[in-house]
Amino acid sequence: METGESNPISIQSDNFNIALANSYHLSIQLGLSHFSYCLLNTTTFTYDYAKKYSISSAKDIATEITEIINNDAIIKAEFSSQSVAFVNSPSTLVPSTLYKEEKAETLLNFNSQVNGKILTDKIPSQKAHLIYAVPESIVSIVSNFFPKAKQKAQESILIQQYSHLNNDSEKAYLYLNEQKVGITVFKGDKLIFNNTFEYTTKEDLLYYTLFSFEQLKLSTETIDVTVFGTIEKNDEYFNLLYDYIRNVKLGKRPHQFTFPGVFNSIAQHKHFGLFTQVLCV
Image (cartoon, rainbow, N blue to C red):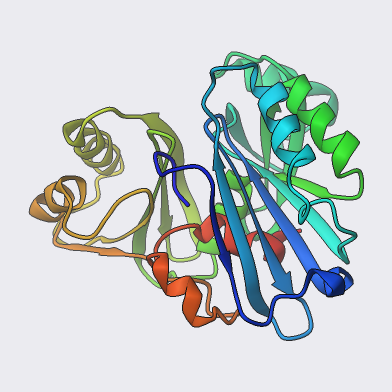
């Protein structure tokens, strides 16, 4: 289900029944190169269905997403609830004490090129707001097809969920998706760093990780690093991180839900943002 895989890929449990759509929560994830969604049975807290489409960019992205939705019979059912997460949007994190809605665009302009509709998420665990921009055409598609869906940036979802992962010391989380890595660092339960970098090679990934640690004066000998997303155990990207960081491991699925055996075709560290989306909306 990750970027670069064949199109489309679907996973369906033996218990899945679209006739019972009103028992499911629909979680959608929208990126520049993929459209993914999954269905959680809200009675059993079991994931029963997941699907991913690659977006080729051969057409206008809005046109391609519209075609995907129109040709997918499952996603147009009447679900009990819906949510949408936007991936890799230009963003900035602001303490809630400094946040003013009327100043959101100005604050985002300080470190990002604003192109699209300005949206804001509140992150309760950190007393902060994430300000981000999503292309108007994508926001329009979500409003037209999923008017009842709660909308958030995946970055907000990840920060909120990381804050619950037993952060009793210095811990870093790397989330790889669409050739970008989000690096998030906690000291105890306090967020001390969050930034996204674009990478092409394994050396790029290592450089941005070590550079971030150096700026924060974090030791690669003691910090715990958990990696999620488009990386494989023992591939060249993971092995290079392992060569330089003593305590690095791949992440796990959210423990709050049940994943039938058919989901074992997906590695445990993949789609953490998609599978935890329902917890933050």
